[in-house]
Length: 247
Length: 184
Image (tube, rainbow over all chains, first blue to last red):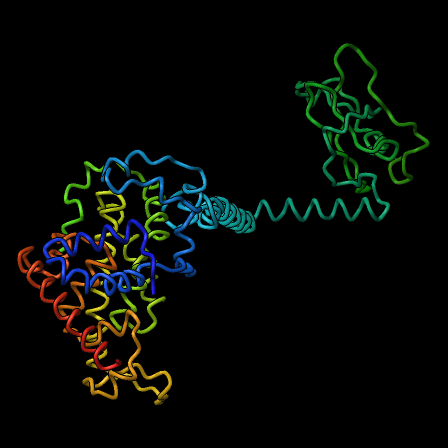
């Protein structure tokens, strides 16, 4: 029983007993004071949900019951209150929801990039030229690793090797040899046999000239090369090197 | 019947941080009286219902006006509605609990023996009153609401509330005198 009601409790009781005569009011006053004690007590411990909505301890003195709406509009804004409002989903920025939203573009970009790489690989595998170039590249790598790094007849030389060669069969400029002219007789096939590739890694054509492919050693006579301009002597193989059948 | 909600939401001047602070102050200030009101009305698990009342208040903070005084009127409006819902639900689904005489708070019409054994606490004072008398006294004394606010919550006119309050005070006085005579 609240034996000594506070001033606020006394005000509440007096308001109720305004229209009651004094004798009856004296009888009811202690009963109303006892009823008023129900309004006091320990504050209710906030539950899990209510605790999220209670940012900090705000004194009730900050709110004047006489001000009405004006007191609510003049409340100070504290960062803690805003921080708790951010923690409530949908009320602000931050928290796990925002981190999840931030990861979404990265995940989408990764998926798109993976799909593009897969589509490109499928398209490249469908191209026959791509497959042949891959096979050639693989065979080259296998040859290098296996110790057969020198170029072989019939193998395309690399024009970008940058190594100067001493190929004896430099092609002549575009000048058609006359069949009945002073063209030399067909020389021995050894004269045009590519020996330089054995000495060098790859034949490198001179600038402005087409790359010279090495001719295979077929053992049959080949046509003579056209004469070089400028009166240069035509290369001729020594007779001793000719095969016996051609002497 | 919730006149404390602002129909024109565009003209409100409080933002969310103000609402958070107002809600905190309302919880600290009004939660004991709300729990006392619910306890006096016989609501089971008044602590949980108090939490429910303030969660309902938070969802209506955007339309609240009047500061802490408006929040108090809205809080007890919600608490009154929860009490009505509690009694309606209890009428449909009777409580299936084992009977424990020590914790059984149900009362029968007062007999001289019951009156002799009845406690003289605040809750015992309300046992002999009708539902309306109990409600008007709780809203006026425990909730500290005005005549107009009580009339809005109970759906009556201020004049009817004044008349009801007068009769409730007379019934309380008679009940107290009867209890005093029976115990003496």
